[in-house]
Image (cartoon, rainbow, N blue to C red; front, side, top):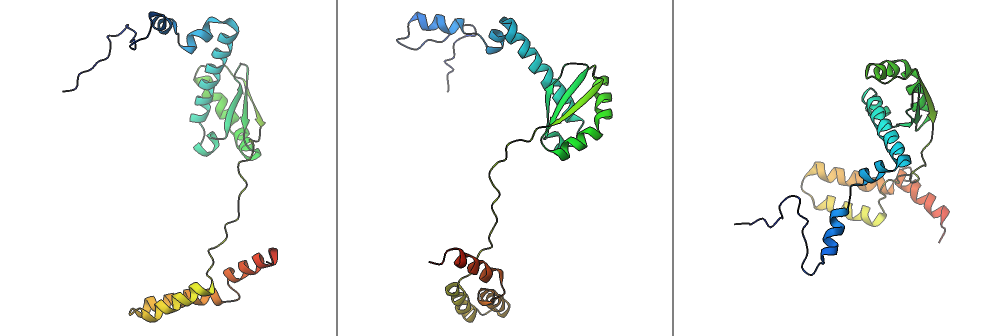
Length: 187
């Protein structure tokens, strides 16, 4: 059977060779929230952040998911709520919903009389790369034709021949893509 070796609650576990100094240090450790709330300036910031998170949650609950993902709170001090939107389109949709949001927030006990919407574009991620269709070279086309001759199923053989013909077709996208690459890099 498995025996639990956890110490009883309230007792700090010690490691062999650890001095009582380490145990005392562990007893003095406090949660970060307790440390922040002890300092007046930091306590105000902590309260402000908690208020902003609560307001943001209410706002996001009342918006469609796609729009809610693009909304943030800048300042949640009454009488006016300041929201940010990631794009101009999201800001436009958000501005259309301002009267409904004010009603929802007032019913929740938050005393906002207006909502200011700002656009703050987020930094772009990686550049979008154009997907180039997979290309079929003449060697692969010849291999497909060889397999088409060896296959007994006529429908499969016809499909393999059509696929091989796309590689040799000068009007196909694969041929055009190869030509574009050859023009860029003439080696």
